Amino acid sequence: MAEGQKPTINDVARLSGVSKKTVSRVINKSPLLNQTTREKVETVIAELGYVPNPQARALALRRNFLIGLIHDNPNAQMVLGVQEGILDTIRGTEFALVVHPVNRHSPTLNDDIRRFIEQQRLYGVMLLPPLSERDDLAELCRDLGCTVVRMGSARLDDDEHLVASNDRQAVREAVGWLAELGHTRIGFVAGPDGFRSAQEREQGFLEGLADAGLSADPAIMAGGTYRFESGKAAGEKLLSAEVPPTAVFSSNDEMAAGVLHAARERGLNVPEDLSIIGFDDTATAAHIWPPLTTVRWPIRTMASTAAAKLIRPVTAASEPSFFLSDLIRRASAVPLRSR
Image (cartoon, rainbow, N blue to C red; front, side, top):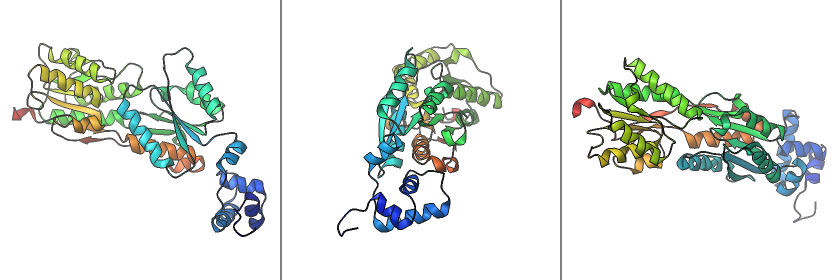
């Protein structure tokens, strides 16, 4: 190799004593190699300072180094947290992120996703709930030769293709804490129909009541869409009940902020007249007043781990799959006896 000339894959192959195809397999993290060969080639790559050509690699793989984030989620803060988590992992690599919002109710959804994957030649796809809860969409990605990782609130896939949280247990414990604070009239704002997260959080709410010897009262339960406006409407319904709640658990922070606004419009003080707990621990929770007690969903960590599974599929099984949510106690929830 002439002085000043950039090393090539042929140089790596010659000095390693292996074929160019073997070098390519090392670069592309193929599992079809023994550790001794892999280490020998990686040592030569490091010594030469060889940098693979991303365009050439993409051509050889018939894939671009793009991670696709496919979602139909009304919670903008959640989607932003996922994007940040993915970028945490791929920053400094040759990978880039492409975000693709879709309409889950569209009759052409599967065709739309197929077209997106084929046109972008994606290396991997991360599916957010509720799309991640559809096995047919995960199979579609796999049929196109695209690695997929699914985010969810329960087990949806094997560990290599999953990041999930313990929503049900986290909500159950949060409701139990409200009961320990003396609240017996605990209202609930549910998430949208068709979301597994909404189902898991509602089940956790009901189990938390049962643990405390309390019964659910439909008069202080309302549906929502994970959006602020739906939380405000739900809050108005709950607070209009003949016996209104002294505390409300909301299935996400955006709706919890809506409940808070509904309470304020009625001249109620939070938390003196109404304790409120949300879910997610998005920026909204810390920015409203009073700061919101909420269940922290480790969105950014989950997304970062999902990206690691996508770009390093050989080691995906060694990455964690389940992540614990915990209660962040702020000023929006207090004991009933303090009133």
